[in-house]
Length: 84
Length: 234
Image (cartoon, chains in turn brown, purple):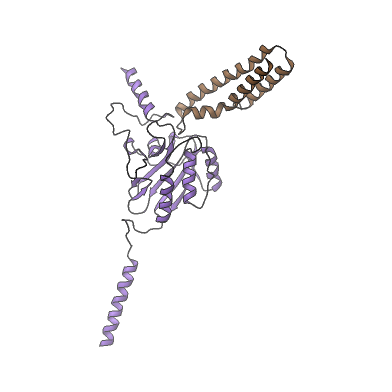
């Protein structure tokens, strides 16, 4: 839920800001929130997987959980570039 | 008298032929039995790990991958992508860790009943000594299983998909226990047949592994953690 729904909701908000709000600096808020979310998830995964036996590198597990965040960060940065 | 002699000769010959036929034929020290080995496929419901175990029930020694397995012994095989020494097949690492160290897992067993089937099983193992994002532990376990048995599982990169597939086959066991092995029984697969190395357990390092430590960073990082704990304790 938090891995998929939250970044998508934030991206919809980014789209709203892009269309309705004229101040381009307000667009920076969403990717900043997304980066913070990515860091929180990655840190918690890093801690959790220390107690779980798994055969894949920890980076693979983290990427599997944050890939939507990364995509949305990229998309929101493209929106900011387009706006400016 | 001659007739009696020929009847006696025929009877002795008949009994001799019957006894030769009924004698077990020994080839490579293995007597023919219904089962040569019992293979069990395991997969965690979360995306953590998939692996195989093979119990030798042949009555002699068999080869599993490149490892010789004595009668009655069990060996585990799985590919690991987070062990620095070797990214590929490791023998007995799952048995060393123990069933309870893995998250909830499901498993099913089937028997290998012929040497042809065993050879196919080993050929598949020997051709899959690698780990990558698209060739994970579940790809390995699923492929080896599918190449060996008629009951197919879904070969994918995620252990959870393999676990679902095992459940669909029916007759599965949840959190099946496994025999334990100590650290000296752990080997990794090498391309040159028959050569195994023991990078842990048999080394001269003063750092030691503890059996009760669980980690997703096996072996070498575990050693460092233990070393740090030892220093902190001083």
